[in-house]
Amino acid sequence: MVYIRKNQRDLTRTEKKRFVSAILELKRSGRYDEFVTLHGQYYVTDDEEGPRASHMTPSFFPWHRRFVLEFERALRAVDPGVTVPYWDWTKDNSPASSLWAEDFLGGTGRAGDGKVMTGPFAHANGNWNIRARVGDGSFLTRNLGRPSDPVSLPTRREVAKALSDPLYDAAPWNSTVAKGFRNTMEGWGRGGTVRTFHHNRVHRWVGGVMLGATSPNDPVFWLHHAFMDLLWDRWKKAHPRSGYLPRRKLPASDPQHGRVFSLHEPMPPWNVTPAQVLDHSRVYRYA
Ligand SMILES: [Cu+2]
Image 1 (cartoon, rainbow, N blue to C red):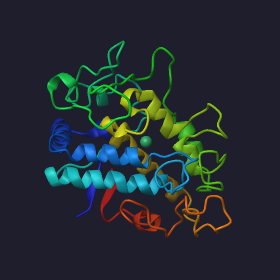
Image 2 (tube, rainbow, N blue to C red):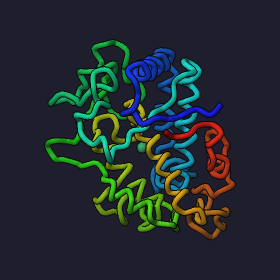
Image 3 (cartoon, rainbow, N blue to C red):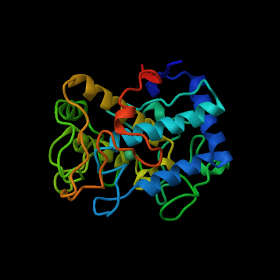
Image 4 (tube, protein in one colour):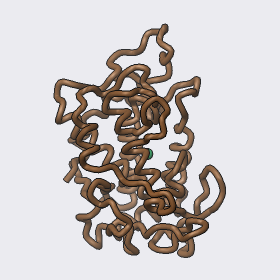
């Protein structure tokens, strides 16, 4: 049965409650932290000598598609009616959005230590103890919009511009690529400048634990990446003649040989190829 991923703003009160409860159950059982740890393990940078499956790489989109899907499977094993909603941050772009309300993800962190004091994931409720992380502190932190040095969320126009590029990705297939949909959306800027866009900027806008390798410690991670996944679909629809690149394994002479995953190379840890995750329409669809 195909199931639907909805825009988070359209969830009913009951849907929000069931989504939150399923997450808390994964947390209680220890399963949630395995996802955090896995993301941390795969968060490697350009200069890493080994294979780079999840970030700064063409397989950023397929890797995260599979990652969110694995998480969603775990949620659905707890409650088969639950799916991962998406957060369209071009529209719901303020801390006043219902996403951050008491009955859903809770709000921003308090001044000083950034500790989140509201909602089901606030530390005081006893259900959300952060274990797998880089740095210290066992509580969820956020700094929505970073008021002391404001960050803005990507706009519709900026996203539309990224979507208009028919090129998926280009050599050298890393964070320095100055063209192509993948790196513009992933958001590493141009050749190491400080301008960061789109996906990375959303992590920054949320702040706190959403920065860096163990960002799935904040449940909003999944809603952000579900929207990224939807944007990849939109890009594919807009450019039916384009496709995932590189199509073939890079030659041994290429400095990125053995580091990036071409269309038919299996990605760890699941050993699925980008080609195998291109079409999800028999598993889930977006409403
Ligand atoms: Cu991310």
